[in-house]
Length: 590
Ligand code: AMP
Image 1 (cartoon, rainbow, N blue to C red):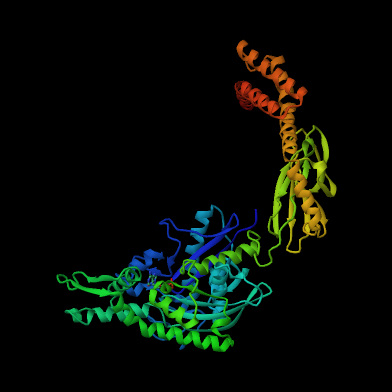
Image 2: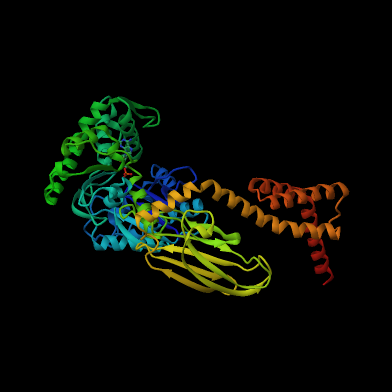
């Protein structure tokens, strides 16, 4: 199995973690089923540490104990940050902790979710940062990862991650795309160009203090400006949360009710808000984002018509008026096929998957033209890497010895689509030696690895000694000419039925050769307390297997072997039981 590398979107407002599983990027949800958690850390008065939703909830009660938007402090110098919701130390520490330490708590929580979902330890990560982050900000992000016990194998630009999530790496060379990222507290637009399978940032413009929060504040102030709302603090966290809720509702509905119940203990406040009201309030904020877009495009020297795609990222792009404004600015409909709040994490997971080998890079799409495998017992082809697997890739399997006292095994590396080894092409062979062992006891692990250059390396390891034998087969894994591949594939189709029958027969024969002597031994010994009717049934089954073997009929042999297997089930179980009793008795005696 490839080692796991996770992809993390460590956002200003929200964060998420993902991984490539069975070739697909997925986000990992926490116990509440949430794939995205608030980037909030609470150092509660009770001394308890809370991260995510629990921390966000505590903000209404203990606003001075909850750190949010810590990303704004990362890698900054004192004096560079103003208008932060909590008091800051001279070194930009908040509640006595450095920004890295606070970020590390979020990363630790994400890592915990991943380990819980995956059921194993997670040690490596790709973490995203805005394209405009400078060296110190990137280094601080890396340090936060290390504090959380993660090796940060790559710091990835958020727009690049988004482009990967939208599958834009499959566009033609020199394609240009714009990524419009409008979140809770920040906005940026990046223009990317795809060159040799890698995205280059041509230009990026943004505002680190422009986001959905601004719309929430404007909406709260507007709602409270009438109908007796003057006595309510528009900056109160509960009020802002309500404004945010109303804003979200208005992305889907035409109207919603803004409510502040019992704001002074007895009175409640209510006001109807129409989508048009919100759009009027949001217009200046949206206009500022559009100005950034024009600047970035001009910096990049790219005209809207030259773009191959425009994609939306960030929760605030769910606002219909934002989509309309973006479409007007770029003269094309933006691509909204991904969840805007999940795209960056998904892209980070894809990058992580590419790096761990769990996912092949789609741009440099190269596949194995034919299946690769080894010969096993009975002359069968055992496929390790199926035809059309994207490279690089890796696969392995454990093999054992067929006879007592065997000292070695020949590994024949094969390529082709036929069921029998003899009908496929041999790419190479080598011997693996091992300590003589009873039949079925030696363990040889065989691993196939094809790197990005199409080179096949076959490694065989005797698990008892750990000794490796390696065979490297240069380039042959992918360098087969098209005609030969076609011929092999059509041959395999032509012979599909006979081939399959031969495989079924061979497999059943191997099983029969294992079962028959064992059954004979039991019957002879009379052990296991074989009753007369049981013996009769077993003998009949043995006869049927022998007859099918002689007839050479695949399906008949297969079912006869199954019947024999079932008939001896009871005896086999009793023998195992008896052997265990004997072993236990010996142990007690000893
Ligand atoms: P992000 O930073 O990408 O997680 O985005 C968070 C921002 O998206 C917050 O300001 C949210 O209020 C906003 N947001 C999330 N969902 C919606 C929605 N359905 N309509 C409008 N804004 C939304």
